[in-house]
Each structure stands twice: as structure tokens, then as C-alpha cells.
Amino acid sequence: MEFTYKDTKMKGVLVSISEGNLNIKLVNGYNLLVPGSSISDINIIEKIQQNQITGETSKPLEKGTRKVAFIGTGGTIASRVDYITGAVKPVLNPGFLRESVSNLSKYTLDINLLEAVLSENITPDDWVVFARAVKEKLSANDGAVILHGTDTMSYTASALSFMFQSLTGPVVFIGSQRSSDRPSSDAFLNLEGGLEFASSDLGEVCIAMHENSSDDRVALHRAVRSRKMHSSRRDAFHSMGTKPLGIYENNKVTISPEAKLRGEELILNEKLETSVALVYFHPGLTAEDFTAMTEGKRATVIMGTGLGHTGTRLYPVVKDIMDRGDHVLMTTQCLYGSVNMNVYSTGRELLRLGVIPLSNMLPEVAMIKAMHVLANYPEEDFRNTMLSNLRGEMLEREFLQEDY
Image (tube, rainbow, N blue to C red; front, side, top):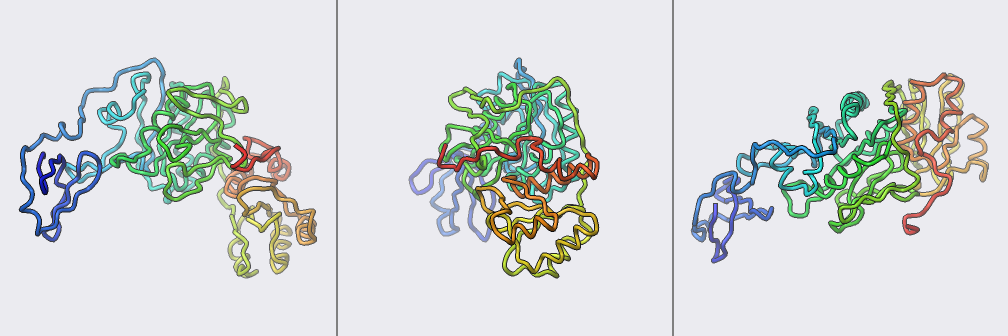
């Protein structure tokens, strides 16, 4: 409807009436709450049809020359509120995409909507489902875009990075921190940049999100070096200890020479051994708690302090784990830097017990890599494979963020 409120002309949709108050969604994306005592100040000028407000149409998308698979798994980016009905609708509605993503006419989209899952509810079983969908769609498209919730997106992207031994095109995860019905949404620029990255010559799994707080650049992060670093900022994702693999700006993509290019064969090893623990060491962690966390686990990744340490009270438990033939691996809970367990006696003792130091590998990536290695490599090769750089998860040279 078009209306005036306190002598100001506005346009919007009546979303709800609660306790005599009106909640109106304005066309600029903001909500207007009209107290019951002020309803008399509203003067309706004209009632507007739904498609005049949303601009949606059932007209199919145009077909461009680049073919990209769109796989929706849920998350803020994959849905939006329809303020006409109050229902949640998919962002992948053709009309909505056409109006919102400026470069869409270049592409033919192969849209596949999987069951929407809140990212905190995603499990390793879901990673396998997503990987199979990518394998199916990538065989017929130049690349794949996966819409995913941001909270665990780096976990899923890292899992697919290890599961795909070889890729014939890029797999680009995209999320958004702010829903598409908000004026400050990051969804559309992320989609725009993600499409460009997904039609490039890349051959690895990445994450595409805002590079800064402005609405002008999208950064491409290697999955196994990415982490969500802020709960709400649009530039929440960073490449940890390294530079982004690519930048999208002013309708142009720049790709780093360090990026892996697409291969000729699509190879998926989907098996995962899920009996892997990730334990954050802290001063209050007791040997009894550590025992409970690691019981029945084939591998345990410790987020140690500093250069890779735990309290000596955990040493007997570590020895018990090693004696039963399972593995203990050490990472650091520091955001930057590498494990070096030869500096202090505590680290050297853990090395003597058989703990495997994992350099500057991110703890969550180490956990996922252990799942992959246990399921796909001989047991006797576990140590050497974990210390091998399979997907760029370990850095020879590490940068601090202020260095780039």
C-alpha cells in the first residue's frame, strides 16, 4: 500500500497486527512500527498489487553462455521473508534473482535446491550429500555455487576440498551475513562475485564473501585456509595467514597465480571417518574430562596453547591413546603462527609420546583432514599423510593480516 504517516508519504506492506500495533515493511527494507495510539495518523492513498511491490515474475531466467550449477543448502543467503504472506521464500526465485544480481544474463543456471538446513545443524553426513550433488552437477556445468549458512561454512567447504581429489571446475561457497530483504544485505554482491569465480579456470573449493565492510569487493578464500572471524560484519571471512585467492571488483575477477586450476577429471572420495575429536585445551581441563572426550576416537586433534602445549596432567591420557593404536595431533589455538614443539620441554615430552605436530594447519581443518585420511589411506600412512600438504592447508610462509 501507499500511505502517509505523520505527513510523510511511504510505501510498504502490512506484515502483522500485534497488541493493537501495526508492523509495516517499507519498500526500502526497514520496518515501521505504528503504535495503536497513532493508527489514526495513517492515511492510505492506494492499495498496490503484490508484484508491484516485490517485482517478482514467473518469467524464466534468460540463458547465458556460461553454465553454473546453483546448489541451495540453506542459510541466510538461501532464503528471505515474503512480507506479503509472512512466509520464507528461496532467494533462487528467478524473478528475484533477475532483479537483484546484475550479471545474471551471462549465465545459464542449473538450480538444485537441497533440503534447507541451518548450518549449525549440518553434519558430516550432509557433507557427503552436498559433495554428491556437486559431482552430479559439475559434470554438466562450468562450475558450481553452493549457498550455505556462514556459521559452519568453512567446515563444509574444507570437507569438500579434501573429498574432491580433482575438480573439473571451481566449487564456490557463498553465504550472507544479512538477509536479502535488508537494504544492507551482502547477498547480492556475493552472488555476483561468486558467479564470476564459478565460471573461472579455478579447480578447487573456495568461499566468496565481502572483502571489506563496503559494498564493492568480494574476496575468494581457499576453503582450507578460511575462517569466520566476526559474528555479524559483512567481511566476516578471512584467509588465515595468507592472501585471498581472488578478488572481484568492478565486474572483473583477478585470480592469484597460487590458485589451483581445473583438471581434466572429476574424482570424489566421499568416505569419512567421523570418530575424530577436536579438544580445546584450557587450564580447567581435567584428565577425566579429556578421557571422556577422546574415548572411542581414532584420532584426537588438540588445540594447544602457544607453540603446542597442554598441561602435564593430560600426558597419561595421551599415552593411553597412543598405546591403544589411536592418534593425537597438535595444533595451536592462536589465530596466527605455527606449532613448534621442540622449543619447550612440555612440547618435547608430547613429541616423545607420539603426538603429531601439524605446523600452521587450522584446528578445524585438521579435524576434517583426519576424517578424510583415516577413511581413505592405509593406517600406516596416517602420520606422513597428515604431514603432507594435500590441498594447501599448510603454509610455507605465513602472512599476518596487516601484511596484505
